[in-house]
Image (cartoon, rainbow, N blue to C red; front, top):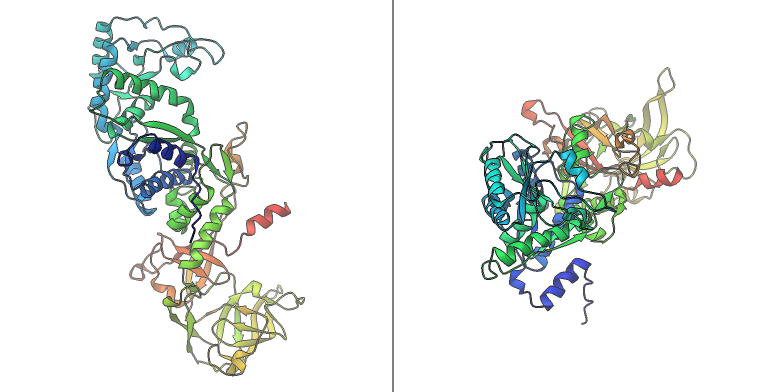
Length: 571
């Protein structure tokens, strides 16, 4: 039987070409290099799936390497959160590495650069440096310190390392060319002075390498074969290669480190109705527009986890959108489709009423209670059945009843019949209203012989609608958090003239009290359920066990259908 060959994305094509040209398969090694200055977001999730997915496909190791070169913004909290997110997505790294592991080696190589006339200490102010850098259309001018002697550069650089100078007084620059077309090649900074406590090296260092200097060299030391970055790093590739050229040609023999890393770039995937900039996500947290990095409205992996998104849905989403060479905006409804599809296969069904109205079955015996069987999932028979209590007084959804309705309304009305899920057929008889005319009770009668699954002729009678319910006497009240898009604009970050926070949706969170069937009394943090006919919900970490007062909190993960698309099409 013939099998259709998998089509390769452009990154896989690069790897296949390198293997064809002599790179040994056992030399393949990838890495995921986050900076620990915030929580990872959905864009990082795509990069994680790319790199770790390549590791799985090629049976190659993948390093987790933290780019911890800026202690002013980095914290151990972020390191721990990043590791937690990657493991939750179902991936495992080969080695846990840090750019700080290589601080000594990077410093030693920088000394060699100075000795060979390839680096110098510049003492200009940042303003003066910006002026002499030139523009994309005009060349730069040499720093007045560019021709310092090797001895003076070595002395100053050593004293920078020893902490003798305040922040901003000196930097170490690579000596390349101030006429380069690529402005990143105009004597780029390799080191700056930064008196700040580092989460791993404490106060051992007073100088820290710049990303461009640490990035490629860390790849080289770890023998990473392919270093994948987002498109904004495309102009950096020339510098990445220049640094490696100097080290490979003069400082390291091929036998010591035989694999030369190759940087290649892919397009960032932006998600509609949110932002995926760590700086802007941090703003939302610090200014308390959200409750924290794991607020379920956030595009962070921890926020999606708390909202109830399953890890496999995020992986499927990453596979669906694929890898591209051009940046584009992905509609969040595609992510929600992946979430809905996964949850439909994996979550048990339960009954909850979120907008209750009282239903009284007038011909049901007072004080009688029944325990009915309810199927846990039509998608997975192995989940079996659960017991649900039934009684004379129930809650149903207010939207499931109309006094008068047209022929397209298939729920309960006066004079018509519907089935109560897993229970009996009922018929609407009358209503009770308050002084304002609002319905407070619906009175109905039931057909005693129509119980679901009883096998009677009445139980097999077809009615147009089925509605869910909970027994009032047994219902468990719960706080239910209903989430909407965090931003009203599909691309809140798209107009640089408008502050993205102008588009924050003031109605992105609604908190209500719902009533749940009693089987949910012992639901644990993170457990996911389908509230039948309503959507998918997840137990929030703010819930407390019965021993502590028994407060249940549920987050709405996603509805059963994409209602947002309908709203947008109307607008």
